[in-house]
Length: 474
Figure 1: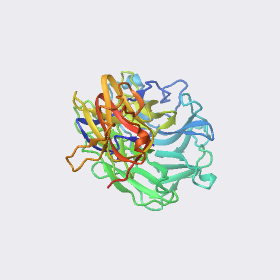
Figure 2 (figure 1 turned 90 degrees about the vertical axis):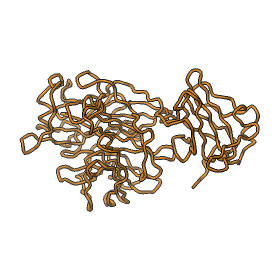
Figure 3 (figure 1 turned 135 degrees about the vertical axis):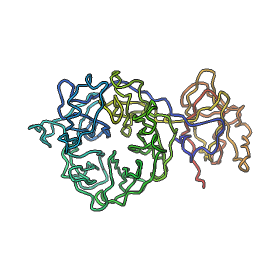
Figure 4 (figure 1 turned 180 degrees about the horizontal axis):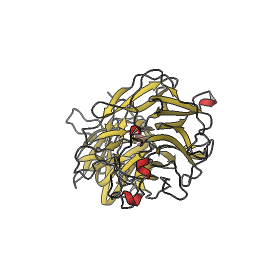
């Protein structure tokens, strides 16, 4: 198991250090563009808007699946071409004005994760034809996942969705992931759900969990549980941003090395003179139980928006809404829908992706240009190899020591003889290197509960894995 240092259960103390996002490799290419103004035209993709993408690899089918929300009827979007929109303002239409704005849940698939197909599903009639990829009409904010735990094959694929046609939170089931049953309204409760209603099966607690949204004066992340995916507990508010400029619009979550990691899309309202006004940034959050959440690196984008403004030709300069990742070797692949403009203005959205080494979501960096220090909580050593993950810049290094725990709050750890900072084989190159000492072997310390202490400069340290186990603490 990999123990990331950004986990507060792993790191006990630090000095001159802060958590920073790790190296994210954005591909910077559009995999699937909003279709209305493309050739051939996809007439029902009039405004993907946030999209709330759900991407996963279906091993049994041998394909990647994408489920996304799209506004399929939006006269205010189709009246102007993208070139004509520059300098104009988008206005949300109202049905009573003869300007309906109707969303739907759509589906696409890919054999390689790059080339995406919108299949003709035959589910929903649009402009006199069923040759489209619409799964469910007059609905939005869906999540879809494949559930191997359900013994009923007709419920293999599960959807959580805001069913706008009935103004209800609802669920739906499918045997093949392409044809879903009529939505079943929640028997009790009806959260606002105007967000990515992200549902999944949580193996830790053996129940289904939903991350959705409610409101007070601002947007709030809420959580609910279910045993059967139909009857849900009363949604409880669990997380909120800070004021108008830091509102959590949506937050899909995933399991990561004993943690839960969230992908909050941060909506910037408030200061209308700010460069980020009406834009949406994707950050990282973390939790040990899906109830208590904290930001991993507050204010730092995980998948950064590109530089640019609407009309500059940059597809993801305005908004980022991410899917939970797909594992690919040592990488986590994050598909996302990038918007080319502000949230409440004209924008076109495109499917894109970014890559992150699974060990390098986030890590500690020095605050100042002097060595930083970090100590872990107690780790039990097995005597086997322990590997440290770090990125080291030129003229940087990472040194480490194995220590008995400090005495008292202000006490310092004392390295074991032969396992001190001067004995270690310092890391001076980026990688995942074995912890080694000139003065002793880790096999001598099998069964010992020790603190790993780091001293590093011009480097980012991410975590350890191998022959260690984190000891339980208060």
